[in-house]
Length: 443
Picture 1 (spheres, one colour):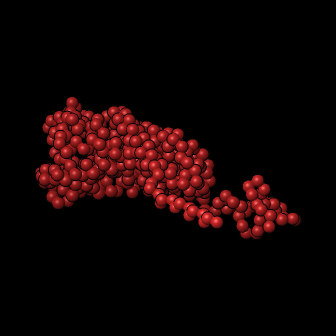
Picture 2: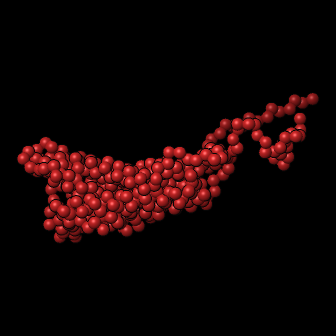
Picture 3: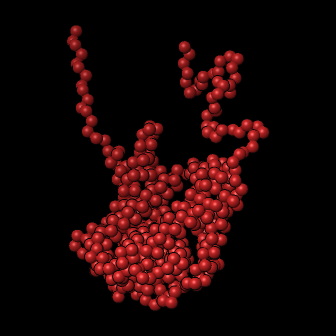
């Protein structure tokens, strides 16, 4: 049998072409079935119809929960009405998308991020449904993905402008132009995420991007999510320790059981905001709860606060004693992300029987810092806003400060975690003692 080596590839048998394959077997890499000649796609919907239905359904499924929650918060035993609850639900729905409301006490622009996350999820699904409806699934066409996003954004903008007109007719004035622009950007960007995944463009872009860029983006997102998780844990612990004060605040509203349940749900809608503020607190820049106030690990200066249950967990002073260990949490989050990066690269290299170079390890670890900084900076910008005029005009962290500190801390932590993991993996462990060969027998 003749040997087959890489220098001598196996030749096809005589009389058989190299491209000949058994019938019914697809070519390698052909994952999408080829349509038959003359076959026309069936079941496709017109783009305007699909976008209008998907945007309307996304708006309805994100508006109804807001109306129910605010209706419970508004109703008491002898107050509240159905038209007022519906209009209040529309106002809260606009606020959840970042559209400020003009009230007698000043602008109200502190968006509940739980509602924003719900709207993003529903709009992402709208992008998925529209892409499937027009037959763009697995088409790998960036033009089709952008077309779907723009169509959903236009439909969502019209709904936002209509909601602003309805709210301004009998409630706080809202700019329809501002609402239309905000909803257009909100809807288009969210739908683009779903369209890119459904059309396969996101996977195509990921495969064509350099490996250090992919690994750096993944590591930075992991570090940012770890920091947000640590912030959620710290915020939950603070609210739990101040649970008595929060319960007293809720009971002071005297709105009955339904009203107190609604106030509790409204507070939970702002829980993601508190998570981001807590992460900013752990990073160092902290946040503000009013003009000329600061809540940092080294300083807590606040004045009179509104009776909001979410503010019951604010720290009462700077960190001291064992609490100083919280300052190491951001660095540990970066080190954990760097450890995961090195473990993944080492595992892939072991499967290919290759070595992991320092450049392929340090480049994504360093890139993780800016990625996490951008993520946390955008989150900090979205979590703040005014709660009226005067003293409560500034609430939340400063986005550029959070982004800068997170970039430095996560990059340093990821580099430390990646380098340490590679060095420990390279150090040889104690292996078995080699046996000495038996001495040869003398003649």
